[in-house]
Image 1 (spheres, rainbow, N blue to C red):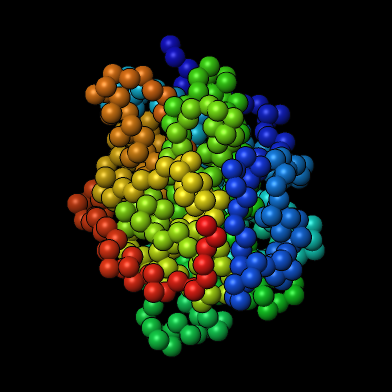
Image 2 (spheres, rainbow, N blue to C red):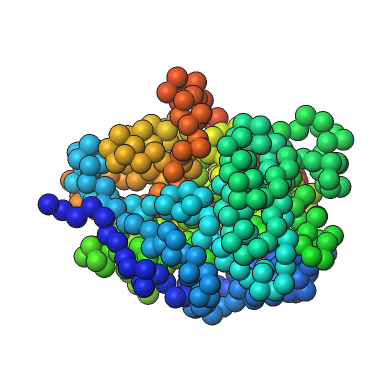
Length: 453
Ligand SMILES: *Cc1c(COP(=O)(O)O)cnc(C)c1O
């Protein structure tokens, strides 16, 4: 009988995060201020603690994980690596499929890996309050839990449409003691400005970020936390890939292709970067980011400087972007609906070192059902994007007879997303590829700063 789960002992939780910058062929492009000049660490000090700013710009290869963070990681880490034997059989593929399951965290996704670290570093800097945004609610719930564990008050600006459609994610945050506010709200200038023009605005991640950043910037006792995109967030998520590499050693195997869904890039970066270290050292391994075709940032966005929020309050980052005024079609993978992408993932993609593909919504749910019926776990709609890509790789192997090793991260479970499954099962879900006109229109919107050649 072949082994199904590859488990590590708690003592094998990584002691250090891996910083991909140390292996990138070019240093990351600097973030810019509104004047187009590179910003210094001071520009971030109003909303981030010094330790996280240091991590944001660090070129050190390894950054130590503080013991109090590892202690909390122990509640669910190391997460299991599964061999998807039943899925392989269902597909009739000679390929070997493995997945790392991050849905075992209390919040049900990979996001607590960075939420716990960010809460820790803020608390150590004397911060007692954090603001943040959340789309579908996964990040908000992760930070609500982490804040509670370190005695930090959490205020979450939740995209209004999700606030109304996902009441249970909201109650989850409230259960952990966080305050949840529908965005756009009347609490901030950014929110009021949107409401003045669009009283019925469904909100967007970009708007909610503006609100959270504005409030953190205006209060001394309050910092801001972001669930993805930034370098330090991807750094914290590398525990996923680092553990996976140890687990592959135990399995006596190594992936030909590493797959993860990609919204802001933290799950993809956390999964793929430790494998990128091997790739940089000469090993052949493909790294594939999967996004929705309704929010095709890496595959069809512009590689340009843009701000991280709608109001333009954040520094400009060089990244793939659909434009900061992007209002996403209402697809169900809420965690993948962001106009931009991690600058690190963007640069690696621009340099041809990681691949990106976009997949339509219905095909992702079809893949999610195939997976759930073979492996049991009901995946988050975001994770279904990775599953779609893994299935397609495995089906290709069925045609060619190749026995490839396919690895993906199952970034979360779908227990709070059953309304979306329900719509899929009733045949009501639609595909909504992002229109080309909108991509062209975004160009006009971009800040007028040149990117380095
Ligand atoms: C938030 C989320 C994602 C996507 O976000 P990234 O920043 O790209 O990681 C993927 N899967 C799940 C389950 C999520 O909650």
